[in-house]
Length: 345
Ligand code: 5MM
Image (tube, rainbow, N blue to C red; front, side, top):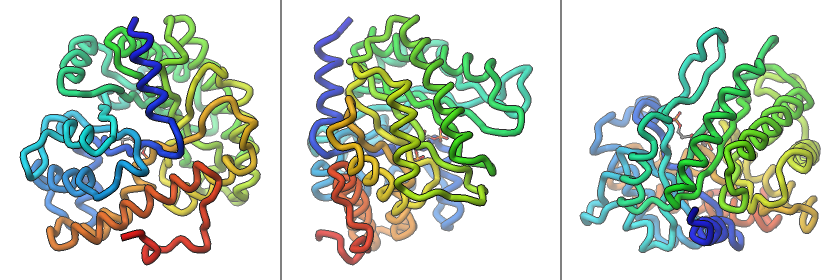
């Protein structure tokens, strides 16, 4: 086991007030987002979009690590620098998503299990050779009248733990992402109960598979009411429910928790992260950071729209969101002052 290397990488990812940028949308997801804005769905447009992100001036001030997708880690900036190398030069640790996506779980209608363990040892060695120092695997848990089932939670927790063990064997830090989806009418309390059961099961499996807790990061959902719930809760209640749930389930040996944004607006994601860091400052055993995709990228994508002429404005918007979340890590995010015009360029 590469204990020291793993611990050093995790520490660097969550040190200070920086956080992670997820830019690991699979081709179908990226194309869907491009299609909505009329952007051509080609490998070169996806490359150009990731180029805009990675070459954003001073991005490394706010972002400690960036999660790439298989296609992206094989691509280069316009200047011919492989993306993983360009990130390192910008003081951003490169990582890569290694799961093969969520597929229907046999015998469990409306539930999914994430695949990708076959051949993972070899793929991890290849990604390490391309510069990846951490990896990510996302499991999806859906809340419904009769779900999630134990079968779904256990299958996903087992896969997450086997993935994490393989990563650590390769000297790569695993980011363990069990996402309880926001879709539905469920209450805050129901999300808390499902998230609690999921995390208990995940950490039980991580223990069974011998995963070094000090050498991993957790990327969970915030505890939130369903998107269609009548009561949307305030940021303080969400902060209490989320941190209360983690204090009962996430061992203190885990160095950091880096949230996914899950479809929240950019501003709400920052407001809620800020509320947690403000209310629980000094009372949490782990760093509380971010690993957002949509909540950092969406405003920039809407400005960029595939046009080279929009690159500078899109980069300002991207930096602005990253900087807002950096402030939220310190509990200093000012939602009232948050407007793209306040971007520091
Ligand atoms: C939940 O999605 C992850 C975080 O993104 P958000 O902050 O937008 O919720 C994200 O890393 C996700 O896993 C990737 O975008 C890959 O998604 P797909 O569905 O394309 O595999």
